[in-house]
Amino acid sequence: MKHPSIGMALAVATSSAIVSSVDAAVVNWNLNLDIPATEAGLFINIEQQVYGTSPDMNAGWDLNPNGANALFFGGTTAHGTWMMVDPATGWDSASSFAPGVVVGSSYQFKALPGGNVIFGNAPGLWKENANNIFGFRFLNAQNQVRYGYGVMYIGANALERRLVSLSYETTGLSIVAVPAPGAVALAGLAGLVGGTRRRR
Image (cartoon, rainbow, N blue to C red; front, side, top):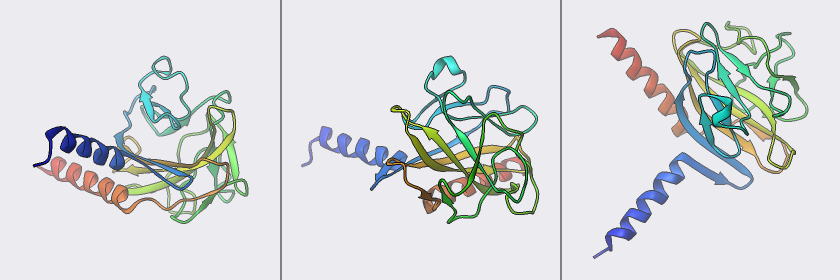
């Protein structure tokens, strides 16, 4: 018979693996986290995998998705987070990219805070009722540049947003945006449940 504490340890280890996994030099953080439609939003520390509703709660934060009327990505140059931009769009906030994009020094990055996210059908623009991939670079605890990407599910408008996951490369190399199928499916399921709830 298996000792209860062994079973509990295995359960904790399994749940931890689902939330955060390290594969070679890539760290994946599956959040499935609603971003509040407020001016504060959430202050997220990518490396430490913690977040809070004010900068004081999370002094080392890197990324701040926010906005009561639109979606912004806030930040400060002290934290070093810059958002990747598709040059074809000619605007100054985070672009939305197709899976497989290589996030690295060959792309253009804009310092935060930038303009609000823009929606549309052209390349680089964000899509409603869909998962959107955005690229970023940030400074780790040793002030070294690291590249990463996130998946954000947008519902019927910019105020319905769920941060599905964040991933980054730990050695300073580029990273290919390949969202985990489980994370993307989870976001789609969340959107489906939300839509069902609204129709009742």
